[in-house]
Image 1 (cartoon, helix red, strand yellow):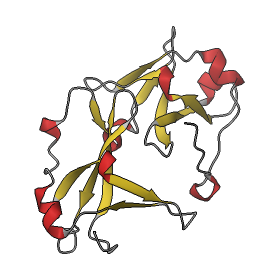
Image 2: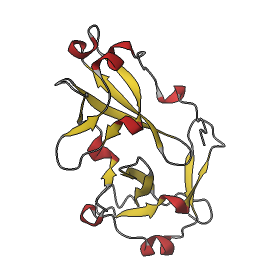
Image 3: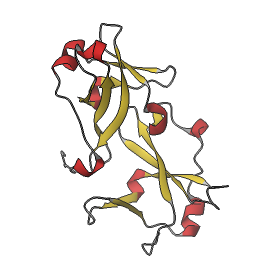
Length: 178
């Protein structure tokens, strides 16, 4: 809120097909989660506070009255190339020129709210060894709204030669690429 008090929590992100966070879906919590109102706040209305180091905090100069003026989050009103992150994670990613697929399991965003990488998980049949996760450039993925498989320009050879990607939230360092 305008005075620094917590008045809502982020429940989802809305990203464009280019990987830019356009809005954050926030919830005022309701009463034990019942009748919690979901609102979509424009990402450019927020600032990020990294003073804590481990837990960056998003801040908006919104009062409770200002929140009432924010649009309710309605998936039917989303632009054609907007995606809810929670709806994208868990879907399959097709590898270029083959029937092999991986699973999109996470995004890595920079401070400006752009997805630099997607984290993909592959089984042992695709890797030629043990199952592994890899970080892939977001630009190699084309998100799909109309089926359960996203397209990519990633090849099986890239998966096989990629370093295994392992991380915990505590391992993530904020890197400003721009």
